[in-house]
Structures are given as structure tokens and as C-alpha cells.
Amino acid sequence: MYQLLNRMPFFYGWTILFAAGSSMVVRNATASLTLAVFIFPMSEDLGWSRTLIAGAASLGGLVATVASPVVGWTLDRYGARTILTVSILVLGLSTISLAWATVPIAFYLAYGTGRVLFSSPLNIGPSVVVSRWFVRRRGRATGMLFLSHSLGMITFPLIAGLVIKYRGWEDAWIVLGVLVWVLALGPVSMLIRQSPESVGLLPDGDLPEQPGAGNDVATAVEEVSWTLREAMRTPTLWLLALATGSLFLLQSGTNIHQGAYFLDQGQGVGVSAATLSVNAVFTGAGSLFWGWLVDRVPVRFTYAGVALMMAVALVLFPSADSAIEALVVAAIFGAAVGGILVVPVVAYANYFGRRSLSAIRGVTEPFVSLGQAIGAIFSGAIYDVTGSYKDAFLILAILGFATIGMLLLTRAPVRPGVETEAGES
Image (cartoon, rainbow, N blue to C red):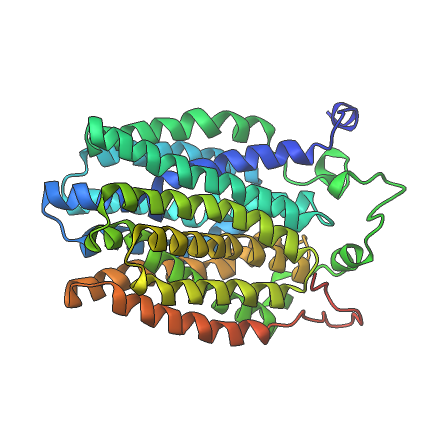
């Protein structure tokens, strides 16, 4: 195996990126934008409130806050290939079962299970694997990974919408579940490897006699390898986790309700669906842009820029009264979402190294899950009380501006006994 991988005409890390990317595509079966397509027809057909439907995402997020530390530990112990393969199998099954989830408890069990997988193993696993295979090109590789996620954001809601239109929402869930298995089960189960060192390679495709060539910063990052216990003693870890959870609260509180919001604004089904697609397209473009930028600009400044863009978009949402304005705001917000997907992943790896990255991500990911859970139900509750999402967007914008200050305080930590700082690039 080692000789075969060393003789390949390209670095095997790109194969890892492809396989990890396939799992990022299919996790969108239970993404917030996909659920947004189902909220209207399911609420009309079943007589459920929007808060009740969005609450399933919140439940999954809350369970994921408990599951993520365990997932981080199992990824280090049993390997990403095993955990991701099992996750893909269960995700397909839970998505298909939503076709028959016509009572709230069944819906919550099925969608909540999928949401736990979305928020925990199918989020931590692929990004940690890519962070281990790439160091000097970590930002760009992570951007490409989340471009895969964005492709799923575009295609899964679109497929769901088309099937709902012609066959109904029940068949739409079945189609999405089958796609999960078809697109990801093979690549994940056959191609994923835990790290380049496990197959006799080095990160970025470097040769043994030329490790880290041409980039002293990346080399410095990898020379400092934190344990989970050491990382948990730093303010940086918790500031970064809290800020990331805050921004995902904004993301969830907007994305899940975006389609319904523009329908309420009288924009029509076509414009509402178009804003979801534009959001997804610019999330992909944003992933590439922020991945490129974070390789060149210190993490905390890059991440503060992401928070600023997201807060500005939320300020603009209530004033988007025309189709053009709706599309522009959706594009700005989508680009910012690309940033919150990519930049924190790079930050954790750059600041704390690869040694205990899964475990570190496991203890910080509950902040993301909790933020998504709160955001989903927060905006729905504001709508149910006021009959509008506008107040929710303004409150979320204020939180976004506050997060900028938090991120600017997040500096690269210094490991005890090590004089050099972890790289901020």
C-alpha cells in the first residue's frame, strides 16, 4: 500500500479531500436550508407550527452538544473511516424514515438523529482528516472541502423542492436518503485514511528530505503539538469556541427561516427558492475566498471580517423588499457562512496542531451545536409571537457585532515550555 501511494502521479491527500468532500455533500440531507424547503409543505399538510418543525433541528443540536466530545475521542481511537462509514449508513436510514414521520415524536427522532450526525461526526470527521493531510495549504484545502458542502447545499434543497412539487414531501425524503448512500458510502468506506504518516507520506505531499519546504510558519505550527488537557487551559480555545457558537447561532437563526421569510415578504415561491440557491452558491464561493485569505492573514483578523460580513447582512435582511435586494442579501449572508465553516477549522489546527485535533474539536463543537439549536428555535419563536422575522434578524445582528470584539481578543496561544507562538496564519 505504501509503495502504491508513493507512486501515484498526485498527492493522495487530494483523494482524501474528494472522499471527505462526498460526506460533506450528503450531510446536507438534514441541513437547515434543506429543512427550509420542507417547512412550508409539512406545516400546511400536517398542521404543525414552524417552531415545532424547527425544534427538531434544535433537539438534534442539543444532543450533539453531548455527543461531540465522545465523537472526537472515537475519531482518534477508531479512525475517521469507520466512524464516517457508520454515520453515512445511519444518515441515509434516518432520512428515508422521515417519509413516514407524520407525528411529532417520530419526526423528532428521525430528523434529530440526522441532525446529530450533521453536527458531530459528519462535521468533525471530514475537516479533521483534511487538516491532518494538509498544513501549508490547509486553508485552501479546507475551503475546497466546504465547497463540497456548498454543492450539497445547492443540490439537496433543489432536488427536494422538485420532488415535493411533483411527488410530495414524503417521496422527497426518500430520494434524499438514497442519495446519501449512493454518493458517499463508497468513497468514505474505501478511500479515507487517518493521516499521511499512517501510509508513509507527509502532509502536503512533501518529500522526507523536504518537509514544510517554503513555509516557515506552517512548520512552526506543527512543531507545537498540544494535548487536549493543555488546550483546555488556554483562554484562546474557549474564546474561539464561544465566538464560533455565536456565529452559528446567527447562521441557524437565519438559514432555516430564510425561505419562509421571503414568502412572507410576498416575494413568491420562485424568488424564495432562488435566495436559498444563491445563499448556497455564495457559501461555496465564500469557502474558497476565506480559505485563501486565512492562509495569508492572521486568523483572528480573518474571522473578525467574517463576523462583520454576517452582521451587516442581518442588518440588511429586514429592508430587502424587492427580488434583487433579497438575492443580494442572501449572497452576502451566504459568503459569510462560508467563512464560519472554514476559518475556525483552520484556527483550531493552526493553534493546537494535529496530535489531539479530533478530541479538541470534540470539546469545542458543542458550542456550534448549541448555537445552531438556539438560533433555529429563537427565530421561529420570535415569528410566532410577533408575526414577523424582522426583530429576530436585528437581535441577531447585534450579537454578530458583539462577536467581532470577542474574535479580536483571540490570540494564538503559547504552549508551556515553548517560546514560539502557534502560527496565526
